[in-house]
Image (tube, rainbow, N blue to C red; front, side, top):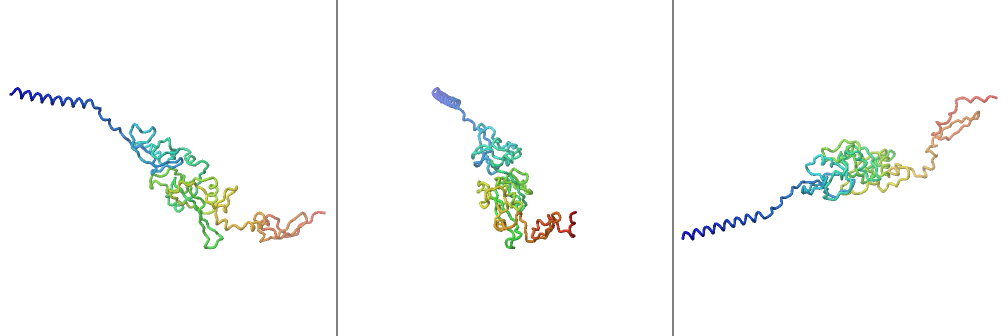
Length: 315
């Protein structure tokens, strides 16, 4: 009986040992699950970015990527020096949404020639004076789009029409405020004491704005981001270029105050008035002619009548 019991125990022990060995062998032959690759955050475009766009923080996102899948030149979160160069940088070529942003894709704001590179082909940069009021208290910054408003005093108008204001250009892009080209990362770092704003304009608009700055005060009206895709151009009331730009080409008020062409044509050449005619004496040798009705603008250029008679010529 003891031998039978001992035999059963040995069989059970052998079965347990065999099961343990089989499990160990199976585990040894099963390949281990691959370790999850390390991932890092990469700076990417949040939306489609066209060439010439000044980068804003809202237009960039972080996207986690596997370390072995990060494109060459992509910027990760721990590369603070490269991230600083993206602030206010200019996009060189189109970037799709989700595309990694590399330094090769942008022009840094401190790069020589940045301002010229920021201009679209055929466009010009022109600076206009601004104040705390006309510049929206420093809230307008590089990359914004504005309308330009001219306010002028009409000296000969009635009290009800002594001051007039009108929009002379719309959809202009601000490319610099003072000497600041990069867009500030927050309100505290914005340039609020600048005295000029540089705008991207067409050659024709540059002429118009130059004349308008002499006519009165220019104010900048900030446009919504929803309209920023429009091309900056003068308003339809401004005629196309014809050699010279006059105040009447820009301002409806100036056109209204200009006399009709028929009235201007009736005046003597050069705009000299004959209303206040002056009497002068013209000396031609010994001959003396009294002339009246000479325009006052010419009277000062002619010889005045002498106090005594001229000396007769020798015989």
